[in-house]
Length: 264
Ligand code: SF4
Image 1 (spheres, rainbow, N blue to C red):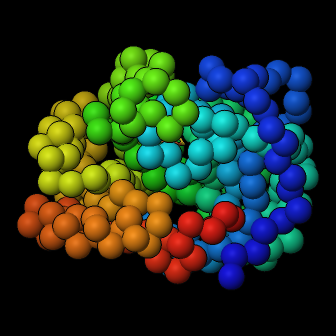
Image 2 (image 1 turned 90 degrees about the vertical axis):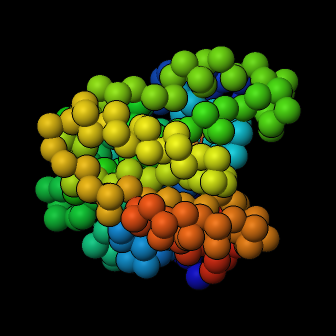
């Protein structure tokens, strides 16, 4: 089973309604810190420590880390404290995730410290922010039109975030910078076959914008679903789409293994 640390997240209430976290804390707003298996992508199955920051500049309706975006909760942790907590779990791989971890300048400090200590670092990002930091794998998950929290799909209100989300969900310059500067994977959450034309179009736009190759095997299709039951509906369809198109399929191991348990 995943091992959670004793990091306690406090409700940040409306203070983070604009996607940021409240000022005044030192270090990083940490929603959770735990040890588990990487569940997605090229490193699926690798034991890793997950450092989940709170706060996101987007609001996908299906967000599987709701308490970092729609209703952010966190405890502030200093960089030393985070590094010590990571070390206590004894893994070689660290996944910095969110929320959107690159919202926070202090994420660069943390990545530098982790790099100095010899960890392999993965950063899970929505691809709208580029920062210069030692990152071993940029796991970039651009958000498709189907992510927008329209009034019908809004988990919290009546679509108040839809316009802002739609305006902010793609930044080709940031995407190209991430692809050029780091080893990367482009990971798409797929709700069904209707998403494929948009994915193909976006991959082509990234190829045109970036000065490095984006291979089909760098493009990962991941089924949308936060529970095993959800994945039962989407997993096979998405796997078949990946096989047909020559992209890579990625499972959601943590959902398959632990369903929707927190800290996985
Ligand atoms: S970008 Fe990621 S963390 Fe932010 S709302 Fe979307 S799924 Fe959630």
